[in-house]
Image 1 (spheres, rainbow, N blue to C red):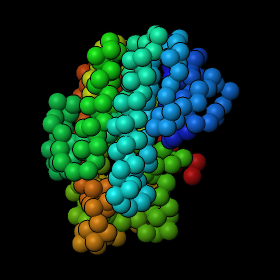
Image 2: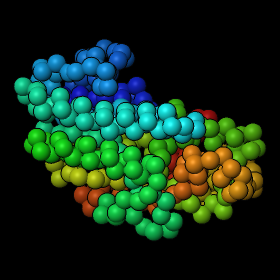
Image 3: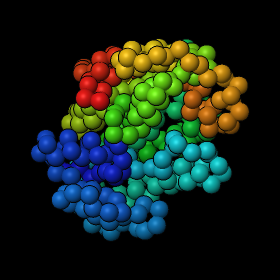
Image 4: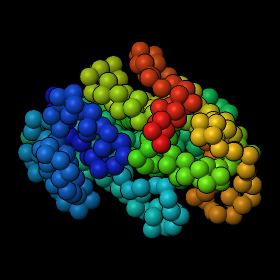
Length: 298
C-alpha cells in the first residue's frame, strides 16, 4: 500500500508517519518541505496546482493539514486562515484528484469533535447533529468539502478527533507545566466535558481505517471515557503528585473573549460508537492510565 500524507510535520502526522513506515507502508509526504527520506512531493495546497500525475500509485490519502487553532486569539484574520486552510485546502485537494490520471481509493480527512458544538452532558456519537459556534461551522464546511470525494468513487472517512494526549505538543504539555509550578486549575465550574484520545490509539485507529473497508463516513476518534474538566484536573494532579485545588472563575475566562469561551469553557461528551461497533480495541481507554503512560519518564 502507498499512502499520501499531508500535515506530516504536525503532532499527529509525525507519529503517523513513523508508525506507517515501521509497518512497511510506503508513504508519499505531501507538503512544502521534505522531512525524511520518504518520497516527497512539493505542494502548497492554497498556492499552486497539483501535477496530473500526482496521485499515480497512491492507494489512500490521509489529509491532516490545517492552520493551527489553539494558542492565539481568533482575530478576523486568524479565523479566515483557519477556515480557508481546511475548507479551500480540502476542495483543492479533491479537485486535483478529480483531474488525476489515476485516483486513490480512500480519503481519510481530518475533522474534529468541535463539529458538535457546546453540548453539556449530552452523550454524542456519529449520528448526533452538528452544533453551533465558530469551530462547529468550520468543521461542518470542512466535512462538506471532504464528502465531494465520494462522488469520485473514493471511500471517505471524516475523522472527528478529540483532544490528542501526547507529550510532544498539543494540549497536554502546557497543562503539565502549570501543574508542576503548582498552578494547575479547574476552569470555571469544571462541568464541561473533555473528550480525548491517546496519540498511540489515534495512530492505531487511522492505521485500522486504512485497511478496513467497513469504516466510512464520520468516525469519532476519541477514547470511550470522556471526563469533565474537574475530573481531568484532579486526575492530572494525582498523576503528577501536585495540588489541584485552584479554580479560574468563569467570568475571568469569558473576559478573554470568544476564543477562551469555545476552547476552554465549551465541551463535548463524545463516544467512539463507530470504532467500538467495528471491534477496535483501545490500548488506553482510561485517562489515568493514559497520563501515567505518557508521563512515566517525565
